[in-house]
Image 1: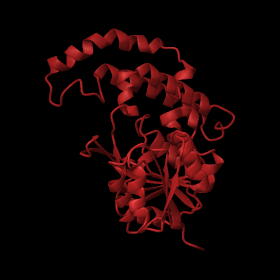
Image 2: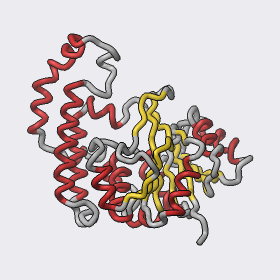
Image 3: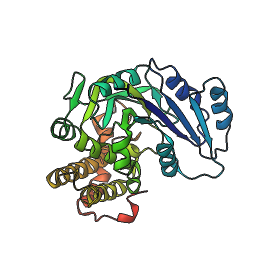
Image 4: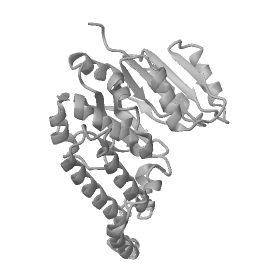
Length: 316
C-alpha cells in the first residue's frame, strides 16, 4: 500500500505581512507536504511578490493568482477541488504549523486509513503572535484513533460546544468531498460542522501534540460572541437546523443536536454577561471592576433566553 499524501492549501487576501512566517512553517516540516497550493484572491498588497519569492526556490508551491476577489468560501472550494492528495490541510495565511505535524498526522493515517480527519492540539495566540492557550482533546493523553461512537462520547460530549480545532485539523479528501467540503451557509462554523460529520462516520485520529498556532485576530468569531450574542445564537440555531437536514441527519443523532444547541446557547449568554473574550475587563481586575461591567448587561443577558433566531444572519 502506498504511503498517504497531504496537500497544504492556503487562500490569501492581503496577508503579505504574515505570509513569510506561514509559508516557512510549512516548508520547514520534517515531512514536507506533497502539494502546497496558495490562492491569492486578488490581493492589493504585495502578497503575490512574497509568494513568488518562495515559489521560485520551492517547486512544491503552486501559486493560483486570482484577478477578481471571489471571497474566502469560493477560494477554499477551488483549492479543495484542485488538491489531488489523500489528505488536505486548509491553512489560513496568518496561522503557523509546528514542524512535526504532518509527520505525526500521516503516521496515524498510515496506521488507521479509515479515519476521516487527523487532528492535534491548537495553540491560540494574540493578534501579535503571543501564545495565550492550548486546546486539545482532554480525554486523550496518548495518540488515539476514535471510532465514531468514541468520538461522540469522549470528544464532542466532553469538550465545550463552541470548541473548534480547525487550524489543527486535516481532512481525508474523499469523505471531505462527500460532505460537500465546508458547509458554507454556516460561515465560521462550516468547517467545524464538516469535520464533526466526517468523524461521526469514519472516526478520527488525534495526536496530543501541537499541530498549529491560530492567531486570534480582531473581529474573530470568538470575540463576536461577546460583542453580538444574537448573531451567535442565530448561527447556533442555523447549525442545529443544518444538522437535522436530510443532508446531515445521518451523521448527527437528534439527541446530540438538542444537547449541543442548548449547551452552546447557554454558554453564549453566560460569556456575554461575563464579558469573556473581550478587552473590557483587564486581567487581574478587582471584583468591583468586573461587576461594574456585568451589571448593565444583566437584563440584556436575560432577554437573550427569549431570542428568536434570524436565519438570514446565520452565515454572516
